[in-house]
Amino acid sequence: SRMPSLEACYNLMDFEAVARQVMKKTAWAYYSSGADDEITMRENHAAFHKIWFRPRILVDVEHIDMSTTMLGTKCSIPFYVTATALGKLGHPEGEVVLTKASHQHNVVQMIPTLASCSFDEILDAKQGDQVQWLQLYVNKDREITRKIVEHAEKRGCKGLFITVDAPQLGRREKDMRSKFSDPGSNVQSGGDNIDRSQGAARAISSFIDPALSWKDIPWFKSITNMPIVLKGVQCVEDVLRAVEAGCDGVVLSNHGGRQLETARSGIEVLAEVMPALRERGWEKRIEVFVDGGVRRATDIIKALCLGATGIGIGRPFLYAMSAYGLDGVDRAMQLLKDEMEMNMRLIGATSVAELNPSLIDTRGLLGG
Ligand code: FNR
Image (cartoon, rainbow, N blue to C red; front, side):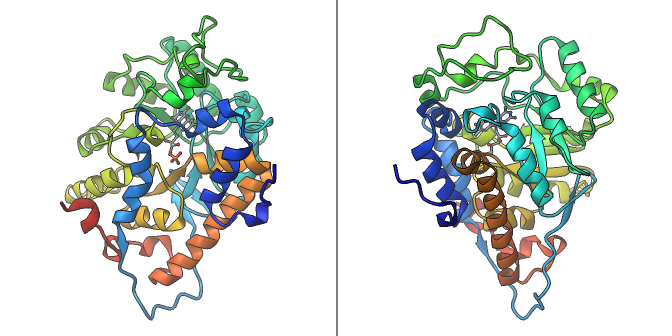
């Protein structure tokens, strides 16, 4: 078939269209699926369109500085590669491709528990002072979890992201129908007798502990010095509780619409959370990350205006990797950087610190 050239991809959606054509059906089903009717998955992106800009004119925008700090790490730009399982479904080298691209762009990579490559392969692929975080699915056998966490810290990981929105895997029916049977993964924490009849996701997730609760947070703090971030927080009450529990961050996320159907978009939750933190003077006590449906730098900028520290991007990098390998992810990141620089200029903001709520109109998101 005629595959479009890489240069013909002008935005992140273009990579998705190519990936859909070239990927194996089972792999496409696993990456692209959302829970149930995929309402939350679609809303994740659509919600950004309910926010409009209020740009400022006649600001000297010759020099734009997009750099920022996340969990104490200086990065070139406030987006990061979020954790997505099973990288080898899309590319024979798997997650290591994302590691290399992240290095080229000085972007942070979150390593998934359910990576196709081994942790050490991904950690070994790190170059220079490149920063990686670990995403954790908590095993019923806490000794397995302890070993993973201690190893990650010893190997230099700079953040522990505990996924809290997946006590049971959501029903991704596209994935279940494709009856994926060979995860091609080292499945770092799975068991041997896994049920492969219900799609890739369910096949590899039976080890996750549904009994995980707030009571476990002190234990995590006792086994690691890495900052602890809860990934998958969905309302202000739980953000406040995370502050009280001594967590260093939260990711406002619904897992890319793959878990609870009709959960709200991360960006909508962010608009609820930041005013509540500011009201209490707590906005410096916790870093608030957001992911889901981010496809344009304008989406990133809107989240920063609301007060997010960093923005996670999942599927677009998987699609770019699946379609074009390292060159694809490299171009996807460059396109985002170019979009971001231009749009900061057009908004009249020269640094991330200058992005604030007065630059956006959220009435369409919050009113009604
Ligand atoms: C994910 N996500 C995810 N999250 C997590 O904590 N552990 C995991 O293993 C995975 N695996 C995974 C696989 C695939 C194929 C996708 C698409 C997503 C969720 C991910 O970290 C993030 O929350 C969403 O991907 C963000 O939405 P977008 O950017 O994909 O729209």
